[in-house]
Length: 311
Ligand code: NDP
Image (cartoon, rainbow, N blue to C red; front, side, top):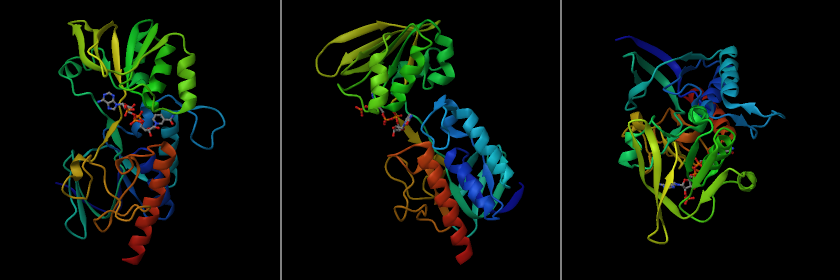
């Protein structure tokens, strides 16, 4: 097994990780970024970004992340494509073990592994995953051109996905378990204005139905009566939130019940493990924005730099 010594290793390459890399590289810390399963993070599976400061015109998520990566490389960060399978944070020097069996011995580690889409947990959802069930409209919407689909959820993601799909599909049904959306008002206004979007309120999915060709219907249950409803459609997009991608760090670092890493001192990136910092959606379950993740990535690099100086 190959062992490599590093000063700063950043795990994850979304907005938090790449911003941490830019700041750490400019502080001459020669950071190494381990890209992970989804290089560029969640923004690579979105389309229009119109709330990241600095762009008067709408930009595309994948393009923005490619720019962030190029910027990190330009200022001196090294980026490798690999996955962390295990860590050992018990000693001063932290060990990171990769899927490729490489081992890094690190002075500091910045965890920016982000979060992933949540699923409903139905057996039928699992059965038809990739055959009509998806958690990414911008990835799979193309396959439902002029077809009928449903989006499940009432947050920003669900509304954005419904709006996106309404430009591709003949009809979109948004299914929400309450009678009020959680999403921003501006998105709601756009949603209500779309003629080919129908909203089914106070309902949950009880079953996703289909055959060997994939999904063909959705069974819904009312949350305030015994009503059952069957909707014929071709695809279902689940948009009910996220879970943090922190599995390899379980039992190595303090996390809450949902698996989000806990900042030792709120407002900083310090964790309970000396020399290990965390930033972005793996810590933050409230804001979850590209800009807040980037801001936290910057904080983590500055915290790590100061920590190394004081050591
Ligand atoms: P949210 O947690 O905001 O919303 C999840 C939605 O799914 C809620 O409406 C929730 O219902 C519903 N839900 C959760 N679990 C279930 C379940 N088991 N069955 C049925 N429905 C369920 O997640 P999002 O992914 O929408 O957004 C996450 C964060 O990212 C937010 O802070 C959001 O603002 C941000 N975001 C911002 C964007 C932007 O600014 N352009 C784009 C996308 C996301 P209920 O309301 O009843 O809890």
